[in-house]
Image 1 (cartoon, rainbow, N blue to C red):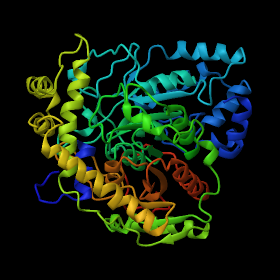
Image 2 (cartoon, one colour):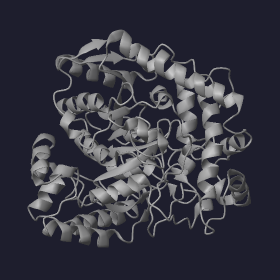
Image 3 (tube, rainbow, N blue to C red):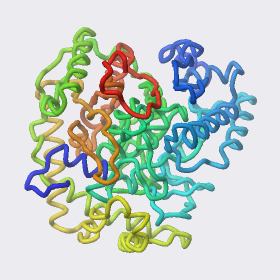
Image 4 (cartoon, rainbow, N blue to C red):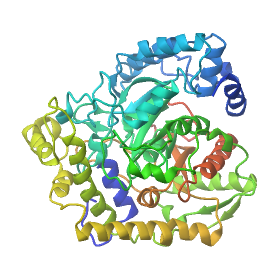
Length: 557
Protein backbone atom coordinates (compact mmCIF):
# COMPACT_ATOMS: atom_id res chain seq x y z
CA UNK A 1 0.00 0.00 0.00
CA UNK A 2 2.85 2.35 -0.71
CA UNK A 3 1.16 4.24 -3.49
CA UNK A 4 -2.31 5.66 -3.38
CA UNK A 5 -4.32 4.47 -6.34
CA UNK A 6 -7.89 3.59 -7.08
CA UNK A 7 -7.10 -0.08 -7.54
CA UNK A 8 -4.50 -1.87 -5.47
CA UNK A 9 -2.70 -4.84 -6.99
CA UNK A 10 -2.31 -8.22 -5.33
CA UNK A 11 1.39 -7.43 -4.95
CA UNK A 12 0.61 -4.21 -3.05
CA UNK A 13 -1.83 -5.96 -0.72
CA UNK A 14 0.82 -8.57 0.08
CA UNK A 15 3.34 -5.76 0.56
CA UNK A 16 1.52 -3.96 3.35
CA UNK A 17 0.64 -7.19 5.11
CA UNK A 18 4.16 -8.57 5.02
CA UNK A 19 5.36 -5.34 6.26
CA UNK A 20 2.46 -4.50 7.88
CA UNK A 21 -1.69 -41.93 18.36
CA UNK A 22 0.31 -44.67 19.78
CA UNK A 23 3.39 -46.61 18.67
CA UNK A 24 1.55 -48.57 15.98
CA UNK A 25 0.30 -45.39 14.36
CA UNK A 26 3.75 -43.85 14.55
CA UNK A 27 5.29 -46.86 12.84
CA UNK A 28 2.80 -46.64 9.98
CA UNK A 29 3.28 -42.90 9.56
CA UNK A 30 7.04 -43.31 9.79
CA UNK A 31 7.08 -45.87 7.01
CA UNK A 32 5.12 -43.55 4.73
CA UNK A 33 6.76 -40.22 5.51
CA UNK A 34 10.43 -40.93 6.15
CA UNK A 35 13.51 -42.71 4.98
CA UNK A 36 15.98 -44.24 7.41
CA UNK A 37 16.67 -41.76 10.20
CA UNK A 38 20.42 -42.22 10.01
CA UNK A 39 20.40 -41.33 6.31
CA UNK A 40 18.15 -38.30 6.84
CA UNK A 41 20.37 -36.90 9.60
CA UNK A 42 23.57 -36.79 7.53
CA UNK A 43 24.81 -33.22 7.16
CA UNK A 44 26.32 -31.76 3.97
CA UNK A 45 29.38 -29.54 4.04
CA UNK A 46 28.87 -26.41 6.13
CA UNK A 47 30.98 -23.31 6.62
CA UNK A 48 33.89 -24.19 8.88
CA UNK A 49 32.55 -22.26 11.86
CA UNK A 50 29.21 -24.15 11.85
CA UNK A 51 29.34 -27.68 13.24
CA UNK A 52 27.16 -30.48 11.80
CA UNK A 53 23.97 -31.08 13.79
CA UNK A 54 22.71 -34.62 14.31
CA UNK A 55 19.03 -33.61 14.26
CA UNK A 56 19.21 -31.80 10.92
CA UNK A 57 16.12 -32.46 8.78
CA UNK A 58 14.66 -34.91 11.33
CA UNK A 59 10.90 -35.38 10.93
CA UNK A 60 8.33 -36.05 13.64
CA UNK A 61 8.03 -39.78 12.77
CA UNK A 62 11.82 -40.14 12.73
CA UNK A 63 12.13 -38.52 16.15
CA UNK A 64 9.35 -40.70 17.54
CA UNK A 65 11.02 -43.85 16.23
CA UNK A 66 14.31 -42.72 17.80
CA UNK A 67 12.62 -42.08 21.16
CA UNK A 68 10.79 -45.40 21.04
CA UNK A 69 14.09 -47.16 20.38
CA UNK A 70 15.79 -45.34 23.26
CA UNK A 71 18.24 -43.37 21.14
CA UNK A 72 16.75 -40.09 22.30
CA UNK A 73 14.44 -38.81 24.99
CA UNK A 74 12.27 -35.71 25.02
CA UNK A 75 14.85 -34.17 27.33
CA UNK A 76 17.83 -34.99 25.11
CA UNK A 77 16.02 -33.64 22.04
CA UNK A 78 15.12 -30.47 23.91
CA UNK A 79 18.70 -30.05 25.12
CA UNK A 80 20.08 -30.53 21.62
CA UNK A 81 17.71 -28.01 20.03
CA UNK A 82 18.38 -25.50 22.83
CA UNK A 83 22.09 -25.99 22.27
CA UNK A 84 21.71 -25.44 18.53
CA UNK A 85 19.72 -22.25 19.17
CA UNK A 86 22.55 -20.97 21.34
CA UNK A 87 25.17 -22.03 18.79
CA UNK A 88 23.79 -20.58 15.57
CA UNK A 89 20.81 -18.40 16.47
CA UNK A 90 22.39 -16.38 19.27
CA UNK A 91 26.02 -16.91 18.17
CA UNK A 92 27.65 -18.05 14.94
CA UNK A 93 25.65 -16.71 12.00
CA UNK A 94 23.21 -15.10 14.47
CA UNK A 95 19.97 -15.82 12.67
CA UNK A 96 18.07 -14.21 15.56
CA UNK A 97 14.88 -16.18 15.02
CA UNK A 98 14.10 -17.03 18.67
CA UNK A 99 12.92 -14.13 20.79
CA UNK A 100 12.58 -16.00 24.09
CA UNK A 101 13.43 -19.45 25.50
CA UNK A 102 10.90 -21.28 27.64
CA UNK A 103 12.55 -21.72 31.07
CA UNK A 104 10.23 -24.67 31.74
CA UNK A 105 11.12 -26.60 28.57
CA UNK A 106 13.37 -29.19 30.23
CA UNK A 107 10.91 -29.79 33.07
CA UNK A 108 8.13 -30.36 30.55
CA UNK A 109 10.36 -32.78 28.64
CA UNK A 110 11.18 -34.69 31.84
CA UNK A 111 7.47 -35.13 32.61
CA UNK A 112 6.78 -36.39 29.09
CA UNK A 113 9.67 -38.87 29.33
CA UNK A 114 8.18 -40.14 32.58
CA UNK A 115 4.86 -40.69 30.79
CA UNK A 116 6.60 -42.52 27.93
CA UNK A 117 8.35 -44.85 30.36
CA UNK A 118 4.95 -45.60 31.89
CA UNK A 119 3.60 -46.54 28.45
CA UNK A 120 1.55 -43.38 27.95
CA UNK A 121 1.93 -41.62 24.61
CA UNK A 122 -0.39 -38.66 24.17
CA UNK A 123 -0.05 -38.32 20.38
CA UNK A 124 2.47 -38.21 17.57
CA UNK A 125 3.72 -34.93 19.08
CA UNK A 126 4.66 -36.54 22.42
CA UNK A 127 8.06 -35.13 23.38
CA UNK A 128 8.48 -33.16 20.14
CA UNK A 129 10.12 -29.70 20.57
CA UNK A 130 8.05 -26.91 19.01
CA UNK A 131 8.60 -23.16 18.63
CA UNK A 132 5.66 -20.75 18.51
CA UNK A 133 5.31 -17.20 17.23
CA UNK A 134 5.46 -14.41 19.80
CA UNK A 135 1.88 -13.31 19.28
CA UNK A 136 0.46 -16.53 20.76
CA UNK A 137 -0.45 -16.51 24.47
CA UNK A 138 1.22 -18.93 26.87
CA UNK A 139 0.21 -19.07 30.53
CA UNK A 140 3.77 -19.59 31.76
CA UNK A 141 6.90 -17.54 32.37
CA UNK A 142 7.19 -16.32 28.75
CA UNK A 143 5.87 -13.00 27.51
CA UNK A 144 3.53 -12.50 24.57
CA UNK A 145 4.46 -9.23 22.89
CA UNK A 146 3.99 -9.33 19.09
CA UNK A 147 7.58 -8.05 19.08
CA UNK A 148 6.60 -4.70 20.59
CA UNK A 149 8.36 -3.08 23.52
CA UNK A 150 4.97 -1.68 24.49
CA UNK A 151 3.96 -5.24 25.45
CA UNK A 152 7.03 -5.95 27.56
CA UNK A 153 6.03 -7.78 30.72
CA UNK A 154 2.84 -9.23 29.26
CA UNK A 155 2.41 -12.58 30.99
CA UNK A 156 -1.02 -13.97 30.14
CA UNK A 157 -3.22 -15.82 32.61
CA UNK A 158 -4.51 -18.36 30.12
CA UNK A 159 -3.04 -20.39 27.29
CA UNK A 160 -4.21 -19.72 23.78
CA UNK A 161 -6.27 -22.57 22.36
CA UNK A 162 -3.35 -23.47 20.08
CA UNK A 163 -0.97 -23.79 23.03
CA UNK A 164 -3.58 -25.73 25.01
CA UNK A 165 -3.83 -28.24 22.15
CA UNK A 166 -0.04 -28.49 21.87
CA UNK A 167 0.28 -29.19 25.59
CA UNK A 168 -2.49 -31.79 25.45
CA UNK A 169 -0.69 -33.48 22.53
CA UNK A 170 2.54 -33.69 24.53
CA UNK A 171 4.62 -31.14 22.61
CA UNK A 172 7.54 -29.45 24.33
CA UNK A 173 7.24 -25.69 23.79
CA UNK A 174 10.85 -24.61 23.37
CA UNK A 175 10.21 -20.90 23.19
CA UNK A 176 8.84 -18.09 21.05
CA UNK A 177 9.97 -16.80 17.70
CA UNK A 178 10.62 -13.27 16.53
CA UNK A 179 8.24 -11.74 13.99
CA UNK A 180 7.57 -8.65 11.97
CA UNK A 181 6.29 -6.37 14.72
CA UNK A 182 2.51 -6.42 15.16
CA UNK A 183 2.44 -9.15 12.50
CA UNK A 184 3.56 -6.59 9.91
CA UNK A 185 0.53 -4.36 10.36
CA UNK A 186 2.27 -1.20 11.53
CA UNK A 187 3.71 0.57 8.49
CA UNK A 188 3.53 0.38 4.71
CA UNK A 189 7.31 0.95 4.65
CA UNK A 190 8.32 -1.71 7.14
CA UNK A 191 11.03 -4.35 6.92
CA UNK A 192 9.84 -7.92 7.42
CA UNK A 193 11.46 -9.83 10.25
CA UNK A 194 12.19 -6.76 12.38
CA UNK A 195 10.61 -5.97 15.73
CA UNK A 196 11.44 -3.43 18.40
CA UNK A 197 11.82 -6.17 20.99
CA UNK A 198 13.51 -8.84 18.90
CA UNK A 199 15.56 -6.95 16.33
CA UNK A 200 16.10 -8.40 12.84
CA UNK A 201 15.73 -12.06 11.89
CA UNK A 202 18.05 -13.15 9.07
CA UNK A 203 17.46 -15.61 6.27
CA UNK A 204 19.57 -18.75 6.89
CA UNK A 205 20.17 -19.24 3.16
CA UNK A 206 21.86 -15.85 2.83
CA UNK A 207 22.17 -13.74 5.94
CA UNK A 208 21.82 -10.43 4.13
CA UNK A 209 18.51 -11.54 2.61
CA UNK A 210 15.04 -11.14 4.08
CA UNK A 211 12.94 -13.87 5.66
CA UNK A 212 9.69 -12.22 4.58
CA UNK A 213 6.99 -12.17 7.25
CA UNK A 214 5.32 -11.81 9.46
CA UNK A 215 6.08 -15.33 10.78
CA UNK A 216 9.73 -14.61 10.09
CA UNK A 217 11.27 -16.27 13.13
CA UNK A 218 9.18 -19.41 12.77
CA UNK A 219 10.22 -19.74 9.12
CA UNK A 220 13.92 -19.16 9.75
CA UNK A 221 14.01 -21.42 12.82
CA UNK A 222 12.42 -24.36 11.01
CA UNK A 223 14.67 -23.85 7.98
CA UNK A 224 17.76 -23.77 10.22
CA UNK A 225 16.69 -26.90 12.17
CA UNK A 226 16.34 -25.08 15.50
CA UNK A 227 13.18 -27.06 16.31
CA UNK A 228 11.22 -29.99 14.95
CA UNK A 229 8.29 -27.82 13.81
CA UNK A 230 6.86 -24.36 14.49
CA UNK A 231 3.60 -22.43 14.57
CA UNK A 232 3.03 -19.23 12.62
CA UNK A 233 0.03 -16.98 12.07
CA UNK A 234 -1.34 -15.39 8.92
CA UNK A 235 -3.73 -12.67 7.87
CA UNK A 236 -2.45 -12.43 4.30
CA UNK A 237 0.81 -14.16 3.38
CA UNK A 238 2.36 -14.29 6.85
CA UNK A 239 2.74 -18.08 6.94
CA UNK A 240 3.15 -18.96 3.28
CA UNK A 241 5.52 -16.15 2.30
CA UNK A 242 8.22 -16.75 4.95
CA UNK A 243 7.79 -20.49 4.41
CA UNK A 244 8.53 -20.07 0.70
CA UNK A 245 11.40 -17.64 1.28
CA UNK A 246 12.93 -19.92 3.92
CA UNK A 247 12.53 -23.14 1.91
CA UNK A 248 9.97 -24.94 4.08
CA UNK A 249 6.34 -26.11 4.00
CA UNK A 250 3.72 -23.72 5.36
CA UNK A 251 -0.04 -24.19 5.62
CA UNK A 252 -2.58 -21.41 6.15
CA UNK A 253 -5.73 -23.36 7.08
CA UNK A 254 -9.36 -22.47 6.47
CA UNK A 255 -10.32 -19.70 8.88
CA UNK A 256 -12.15 -21.48 11.68
CA UNK A 257 -10.29 -24.79 11.47
CA UNK A 258 -7.92 -23.60 14.23
CA UNK A 259 -9.06 -21.32 17.04
CA UNK A 260 -7.65 -17.79 17.27
CA UNK A 261 -8.46 -17.29 20.97
CA UNK A 262 -5.41 -16.07 22.83
CA UNK A 263 -3.63 -14.83 19.69
CA UNK A 264 -2.86 -11.12 19.27
CA UNK A 265 -5.13 -10.23 16.34
CA UNK A 266 -5.11 -8.26 13.14
CA UNK A 267 -8.50 -9.13 11.69
CA UNK A 268 -10.98 -11.84 12.68
CA UNK A 269 -12.25 -12.31 9.11
CA UNK A 270 -8.81 -13.47 7.94
CA UNK A 271 -6.60 -14.40 10.93
CA UNK A 272 -5.49 -17.97 11.55
CA UNK A 273 -2.59 -19.91 13.03
CA UNK A 274 -0.97 -22.72 11.08
CA UNK A 275 1.92 -25.22 10.82
CA UNK A 276 5.39 -24.39 9.51
CA UNK A 277 7.51 -27.49 8.95
CA UNK A 278 10.16 -29.09 6.75
CA UNK A 279 7.81 -31.69 5.24
CA UNK A 280 4.19 -32.07 4.22
CA UNK A 281 3.94 -35.11 6.49
CA UNK A 282 4.89 -33.08 9.55
CA UNK A 283 2.43 -30.39 8.49
CA UNK A 284 -0.35 -33.00 8.39
CA UNK A 285 0.57 -34.27 11.86
CA UNK A 286 0.75 -30.80 13.38
CA UNK A 287 -2.48 -29.63 11.75
CA UNK A 288 -4.42 -32.56 13.20
CA UNK A 289 -3.24 -31.71 16.70
CA UNK A 290 -4.53 -28.12 16.47
CA UNK A 291 -8.10 -28.54 15.21
CA UNK A 292 -11.15 -28.39 17.44
CA UNK A 293 -14.17 -26.31 18.43
CA UNK A 294 -13.40 -23.55 20.93
CA UNK A 295 -16.16 -21.70 22.73
CA UNK A 296 -13.92 -18.60 22.83
CA UNK A 297 -13.84 -18.45 19.01
CA UNK A 298 -17.32 -18.81 17.52
CA UNK A 299 -16.11 -19.35 13.94
CA UNK A 300 -14.64 -22.73 14.95
CA UNK A 301 -18.18 -24.10 15.26
CA UNK A 302 -18.32 -24.06 11.47
CA UNK A 303 -15.56 -26.70 11.39
CA UNK A 304 -17.76 -29.40 12.98
CA UNK A 305 -17.87 -32.37 10.63
CA UNK A 306 -15.23 -30.80 8.39
CA UNK A 307 -12.13 -31.05 10.60
CA UNK A 308 -9.92 -34.05 11.28
CA UNK A 309 -7.51 -34.99 14.05
CA UNK A 310 -5.50 -37.16 11.65
CA UNK A 311 -4.61 -35.59 8.32
CA UNK A 312 -1.87 -38.13 7.54
CA UNK A 313 -4.63 -40.43 6.26
CA UNK A 314 -4.87 -38.21 3.16
CA UNK A 315 -1.21 -38.49 2.17
CA UNK A 316 -0.48 -40.58 -0.89
CA UNK A 317 -0.36 -40.51 -4.69
CA UNK A 318 -2.36 -37.32 -4.96
CA UNK A 319 -1.42 -36.16 -8.45
CA UNK A 320 -2.57 -39.10 -10.55
CA UNK A 321 -6.00 -38.15 -11.89
CA UNK A 322 -5.95 -34.72 -10.22
CA UNK A 323 -7.04 -31.61 -12.14
CA UNK A 324 -4.68 -28.75 -11.41
CA UNK A 325 -5.49 -25.22 -12.53
CA UNK A 326 -2.70 -22.74 -13.26
CA UNK A 327 -3.52 -19.26 -11.93
CA UNK A 328 -1.42 -17.73 -14.69
CA UNK A 329 -2.06 -14.07 -13.75
CA UNK A 330 0.17 -14.54 -10.71
CA UNK A 331 3.14 -15.45 -12.91
CA UNK A 332 5.44 -13.29 -15.09
CA UNK A 333 6.98 -11.16 -12.34
CA UNK A 334 10.24 -13.12 -12.63
CA UNK A 335 11.61 -15.20 -15.51
CA UNK A 336 13.60 -17.32 -13.08
CA UNK A 337 10.53 -18.08 -10.95
CA UNK A 338 8.51 -18.88 -14.08
CA UNK A 339 11.19 -21.42 -15.04
CA UNK A 340 10.88 -23.09 -11.63
CA UNK A 341 7.11 -23.23 -12.03
CA UNK A 342 7.38 -24.68 -15.54
CA UNK A 343 9.47 -27.54 -14.15
CA UNK A 344 6.90 -28.06 -11.38
CA UNK A 345 4.04 -28.21 -13.88
CA UNK A 346 5.98 -30.72 -16.01
CA UNK A 347 6.44 -32.94 -12.94
CA UNK A 348 2.71 -32.89 -12.25
CA UNK A 349 1.89 -33.74 -15.86
CA UNK A 350 4.29 -36.68 -15.78
CA UNK A 351 2.69 -37.86 -12.51
CA UNK A 352 -0.69 -38.12 -14.22
CA UNK A 353 -2.30 -34.79 -13.36
CA UNK A 354 -4.44 -32.93 -15.89
CA UNK A 355 -3.23 -29.34 -16.16
CA UNK A 356 -5.75 -26.58 -16.96
CA UNK A 357 -3.75 -23.56 -18.10
CA UNK A 358 -4.82 -20.85 -17.65
CA UNK A 359 -7.35 -21.21 -14.86
CA UNK A 360 -7.35 -17.68 -13.52
CA UNK A 361 -9.41 -16.34 -10.66
CA UNK A 362 -12.00 -14.17 -12.49
CA UNK A 363 -11.93 -11.37 -9.91
CA UNK A 364 -8.15 -11.07 -9.55
CA UNK A 365 -7.23 -7.38 -9.35
CA UNK A 366 -10.78 -6.20 -8.55
CA UNK A 367 -10.54 -5.88 -4.75
CA UNK A 368 -9.25 -2.31 -4.80
CA UNK A 369 -8.86 -0.94 -1.28
CA UNK A 370 -11.56 -3.22 0.17
CA UNK A 371 -9.26 -5.70 1.93
CA UNK A 372 -7.19 -2.92 3.47
CA UNK A 373 -10.35 -1.17 4.70
CA UNK A 374 -11.61 -4.37 6.34
CA UNK A 375 -8.29 -4.97 8.07
CA UNK A 376 -8.05 -1.40 9.38
CA UNK A 377 -11.52 -1.55 10.94
CA UNK A 378 -11.08 -5.05 12.37
CA UNK A 379 -7.59 -4.34 13.68
CA UNK A 380 -8.84 -1.43 15.76
CA UNK A 381 -11.77 -3.40 17.18
CA UNK A 382 -9.94 -6.70 17.70
CA UNK A 383 -6.71 -5.28 19.12
CA UNK A 384 -8.59 -3.03 21.54
CA UNK A 385 -10.55 -6.06 22.77
CA UNK A 386 -7.34 -8.03 23.29
CA UNK A 387 -5.46 -5.21 25.03
CA UNK A 388 -8.34 -4.37 27.35
CA UNK A 389 -8.13 -7.86 28.85
CA UNK A 390 -4.46 -7.55 29.81
CA UNK A 391 -3.38 -6.89 33.36
CA UNK A 392 -1.62 -3.94 34.92
CA UNK A 393 1.82 -5.30 34.01
CA UNK A 394 1.32 -3.95 30.47
CA UNK A 395 1.47 -0.20 29.89
CA UNK A 396 -0.91 -0.06 26.91
CA UNK A 397 -4.56 -1.12 26.87
CA UNK A 398 -5.78 0.39 23.62
CA UNK A 399 -4.58 1.14 20.10
CA UNK A 400 -4.50 4.84 21.01
CA UNK A 401 -2.17 4.16 23.94
CA UNK A 402 0.02 1.97 21.72
CA UNK A 403 0.46 4.81 19.23
CA UNK A 404 1.36 7.15 22.08
CA UNK A 405 3.88 4.66 23.48
CA UNK A 406 5.60 4.39 20.11
CA UNK A 407 5.84 8.16 19.81
CA UNK A 408 7.36 8.44 23.29
CA UNK A 409 9.85 5.71 22.39
CA UNK A 410 10.45 6.86 18.82
CA UNK A 411 14.21 6.36 19.03
CA UNK A 412 13.76 2.60 19.36
CA UNK A 413 10.32 1.64 18.07
CA UNK A 414 10.18 4.07 15.15
CA UNK A 415 13.87 4.21 14.29
CA UNK A 416 13.46 2.56 10.86
CA UNK A 417 9.81 3.07 9.89
CA UNK A 418 6.75 4.78 11.28
CA UNK A 419 3.28 3.60 12.33
CA UNK A 420 1.06 4.94 9.57
CA UNK A 421 -1.13 1.82 9.53
CA UNK A 422 -1.79 2.08 13.28
CA UNK A 423 -2.77 5.73 12.87
CA UNK A 424 -5.12 4.94 9.97
CA UNK A 425 -6.75 2.14 11.96
CA UNK A 426 -7.27 4.37 15.00
CA UNK A 427 -9.11 6.87 12.78
CA UNK A 428 -11.70 4.25 11.74
CA UNK A 429 -15.14 3.83 13.27
CA UNK A 430 -16.66 0.69 14.75
CA UNK A 431 -17.72 -2.54 13.02
CA UNK A 432 -21.21 -1.19 12.40
CA UNK A 433 -19.83 1.43 10.03
CA UNK A 434 -21.41 1.22 6.53
CA UNK A 435 -17.99 1.60 4.92
CA UNK A 436 -16.70 -1.46 6.78
CA UNK A 437 -19.76 -3.58 6.06
CA UNK A 438 -19.65 -2.66 2.38
CA UNK A 439 -15.94 -3.48 2.08
CA UNK A 440 -16.37 -6.80 3.92
CA UNK A 441 -19.25 -7.87 1.68
CA UNK A 442 -17.22 -6.95 -1.41
CA UNK A 443 -14.24 -8.97 -0.22
CA UNK A 444 -16.26 -12.10 0.48
CA UNK A 445 -18.22 -11.85 -2.77
CA UNK A 446 -15.18 -11.33 -4.98
CA UNK A 447 -12.95 -13.88 -3.25
CA UNK A 448 -15.49 -16.69 -2.75
CA UNK A 449 -18.47 -17.18 -5.14
CA UNK A 450 -17.13 -14.93 -7.89
CA UNK A 451 -13.49 -15.83 -7.25
CA UNK A 452 -11.93 -19.11 -6.12
CA UNK A 453 -15.23 -21.02 -6.01
CA UNK A 454 -16.07 -19.90 -9.55
CA UNK A 455 -12.85 -21.09 -11.17
CA UNK A 456 -12.83 -24.33 -9.17
CA UNK A 457 -16.40 -25.11 -10.26
CA UNK A 458 -15.88 -24.08 -13.89
CA UNK A 459 -12.97 -26.46 -14.44
CA UNK A 460 -13.87 -29.07 -11.78
CA UNK A 461 -10.43 -28.59 -10.24
CA UNK A 462 -8.70 -30.45 -7.44
CA UNK A 463 -6.52 -27.42 -6.71
CA UNK A 464 -5.06 -24.24 -8.17
CA UNK A 465 -1.35 -23.43 -8.28
CA UNK A 466 0.75 -20.26 -8.43
CA UNK A 467 4.26 -19.19 -7.39
CA UNK A 468 4.21 -18.27 -3.72
CA UNK A 469 6.66 -15.40 -4.10
CA UNK A 470 9.97 -14.11 -5.39
CA UNK A 471 13.43 -15.11 -4.18
CA UNK A 472 14.39 -13.45 -0.89
CA UNK A 473 15.31 -9.79 -1.39
CA UNK A 474 18.23 -8.03 0.27
CA UNK A 475 17.15 -6.62 3.62
CA UNK A 476 17.05 -2.82 3.66
CA UNK A 477 15.93 -1.29 6.95
CA UNK A 478 15.97 2.23 5.51
CA UNK A 479 13.78 1.59 2.45
CA UNK A 480 11.75 -1.40 3.57
CA UNK A 481 10.67 -4.52 1.71
CA UNK A 482 10.86 -4.93 -2.05
CA UNK A 483 8.13 -7.37 -3.08
CA UNK A 484 7.66 -8.01 -6.79
CA UNK A 485 4.99 -10.69 -6.99
CA UNK A 486 3.45 -13.96 -5.89
CA UNK A 487 0.23 -15.32 -4.44
CA UNK A 488 -1.66 -15.19 -1.15
CA UNK A 489 -4.41 -12.56 -1.12
CA UNK A 490 -7.38 -14.31 -2.72
CA UNK A 491 -7.12 -17.28 -0.35
CA UNK A 492 -6.48 -14.96 2.59
CA UNK A 493 -9.50 -12.75 1.89
CA UNK A 494 -11.74 -15.77 1.28
CA UNK A 495 -10.52 -17.48 4.44
CA UNK A 496 -9.64 -20.54 2.35
CA UNK A 497 -6.66 -22.89 2.80
CA UNK A 498 -3.32 -22.44 1.07
CA UNK A 499 -0.17 -24.57 1.31
CA UNK A 500 3.29 -23.78 -0.04
CA UNK A 501 5.92 -26.44 -0.75
CA UNK A 502 9.56 -26.02 -1.88
CA UNK A 503 9.64 -26.06 -5.71
CA UNK A 504 13.23 -25.18 -6.52
CA UNK A 505 15.92 -22.54 -6.19
CA UNK A 506 17.12 -19.39 -7.89
CA UNK A 507 20.82 -18.78 -7.18
CA UNK A 508 20.53 -20.88 -4.05
CA UNK A 509 17.43 -19.02 -2.77
CA UNK A 510 14.28 -21.12 -2.23
CA UNK A 511 11.12 -20.76 -4.30
CA UNK A 512 7.78 -22.18 -3.17
CA UNK A 513 4.79 -23.39 -5.13
CA UNK A 514 1.31 -22.60 -3.78
CA UNK A 515 -1.56 -25.10 -3.85
CA UNK A 516 -4.95 -23.65 -2.93
CA UNK A 517 -8.67 -24.43 -3.21
CA UNK A 518 -12.02 -23.88 -1.48
CA UNK A 519 -13.08 -23.97 2.15
CA UNK A 520 -11.97 -27.00 4.21
CA UNK A 521 -10.08 -28.49 1.26
CA UNK A 522 -7.04 -29.28 3.43
CA UNK A 523 -7.26 -33.05 2.71
CA UNK A 524 -7.06 -32.51 -1.06
CA UNK A 525 -4.33 -29.88 -0.77
CA UNK A 526 -2.20 -32.02 1.53
CA UNK A 527 -2.62 -34.96 -0.85
CA UNK A 528 -1.40 -33.14 -3.95
CA UNK A 529 1.29 -31.23 -2.05
CA UNK A 530 2.63 -34.45 -0.54
CA UNK A 531 2.75 -36.16 -3.92
CA UNK A 532 4.60 -33.22 -5.43
CA UNK A 533 7.05 -33.12 -2.53
CA UNK A 534 7.79 -36.83 -2.73
CA UNK A 535 8.44 -36.65 -6.46
CA UNK A 536 10.68 -33.59 -6.34
CA UNK A 537 12.39 -33.51 -2.93
CA UNK A 538 13.38 -29.86 -3.37
CA UNK A 539 13.86 -29.14 0.33
CA UNK A 540 17.54 -28.29 0.86
CA UNK A 541 19.31 -27.33 4.07
CA UNK A 542 20.54 -23.72 4.28
CA UNK A 543 24.26 -22.98 4.15
CA UNK A 544 24.19 -19.77 6.25
CA UNK A 545 26.05 -17.87 3.54
CA UNK A 546 26.84 -14.22 4.22
CA UNK A 547 25.48 -13.32 0.76
CA UNK A 548 24.56 -14.85 -2.60
CA UNK A 549 27.17 -15.10 -5.34
CA UNK A 550 25.25 -14.15 -8.47
CA UNK A 551 28.22 -15.14 -10.64
CA UNK A 552 27.70 -18.81 -9.79
CA UNK A 553 25.40 -21.05 -11.78
CA UNK A 554 22.39 -22.57 -10.05
CA UNK A 555 24.18 -25.91 -9.89
CA UNK A 556 27.13 -24.29 -8.14
CA UNK A 557 24.88 -22.36 -5.74
